[in-house]
Length: 203
Image (spheres, rainbow, N blue to C red):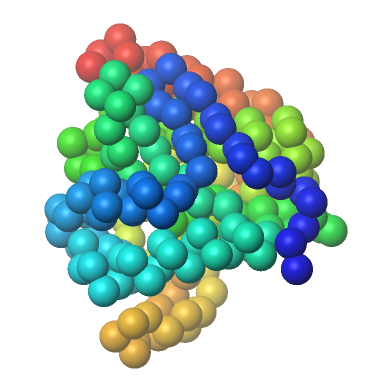
C-alpha cells in the first residue's frame, strides 16, 4: 500500500547535479550510462546487461507507486546528461527510518564531488524534510569501493550480516551495514560540505 510519507515528485537540486524522479523515458539514457562494465566489477548485479537492467528499473518505478522505493536519476547540470542513479528503499514511516542505496555513477565522475553532493541532497531531504531518525546504507562486504564511499560521508559501521542475501549466481553474500542518526546529522553534514569544498579547490 502506498504511504504518504514521500510525496511525488521529488526534485533535489545541487551545485553540480540534479536528482529527478526516474521515469520510463529516462531508461534508455540510464542504460547507456550503465554500459561500462568496470562499474559492476565489485557488485552483485551487472546493470550493463539489458535483460537485467530493464526489469530492475521498471520494477523500481512500480515500487515507487507502491510506496516501497523512490528511484532517482542523477543529472549532471553542465552537460544535462544522465550519469547515474540512486534511490530510497526500505521506506518505513512508522519507525521513521529509510535506506539510501542502488547508487552508481559513470566512471568518469568517480572521485569528483558528484557522489558527495548526491548524498548531501538525499540526507538533507531525509533529516530536514522527512524528519527521519535513521538513514541506513549497505554494501556487499567485499565491495571495498562502495564501503569506502559510505564511510567517507560519515556513516557508522554497524556490522556484517553473514549470508544475508542470495546473489543472482546463487551464491550467498555477506552484507555490511552502516547508518547515520538524526542527532549525528549536523556533524555529518558539515563534514560532507568540507569534503566537497576541498575537492572543488583541488580538481
